[in-house]
Length: 380
Image (cartoon, rainbow, N blue to C red; front, side):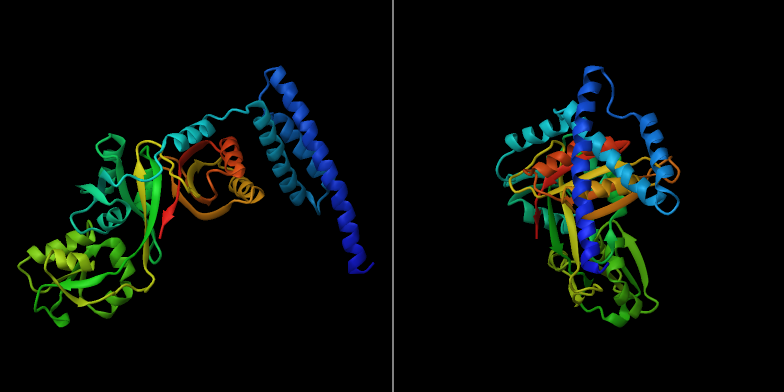
């Protein structure tokens, strides 16, 4: 048989398969009715285990792995469909719909906003792009920002999440696991690090450079060229500029922003010293309450998956089957749990789409813990 005839055979087989698939799902719906009438749960672990063993045995050695993967996913879809029929109301779905209806059409122009750092920090610059008239409360740590939101001290908080050069800000992801919050907006900002010094300081005079660890990482190539200059991490880039300005030393420099040069009356000795010209940091704006503003087309979730093969695959397969684009996947180790992780996902999907509601209704079934962090739009 030539390729055309073989493909015709495939098409014919697929036609039979899709009819059988539809029939299988129809029977699953009937089983859902029976389970609901008799007070039975959608999941029957013993039945699924027996069924998979039988499938693997019938598939034979050449196809047992493929058959196991196929039928594991098929059973997940059948169970998800049964859950949807047995529990048409979703608490999370209702919460999202209520948030859409109760949230104002625009972010407020004026708000009390928590930022980490001091005057001139990049988080402050991001905040000023998000809010026309922000009342900024500065905190020493990122944990302080989360706590301020959680305790109702500030309505919003602005935090860095990832950088195009240095990668994810792992400490933020770790703090996400400990605090309750919602993401209401995100913003990508171009970051330019400059070498700031006191008036008259030359490059050859510098013995120590201070900045935040992320800025140091983003300028590693420039710092390497300077040779034996000491590099010291501090709380943030604005604090580094302030320390240079207040220090009696003339051999001290900071990696910081142009606005900090003006703010602390320092000279820019070298401009844009970051490794990459397209150096962007993504900031998130968080709140205590769920707020979903018009145009929300990105959703963030966190989950703990069962510690067994295929758990992550099943989640990713669900994104694929619903046509939802995964734009960020991050994993962080869970404290006090050996080799177990919290997974963070950013998904590109409109909060108004049926696929979004299908997804949030199904995901809780696939994981041990599930947190919906919010749906929002991103400013660039």
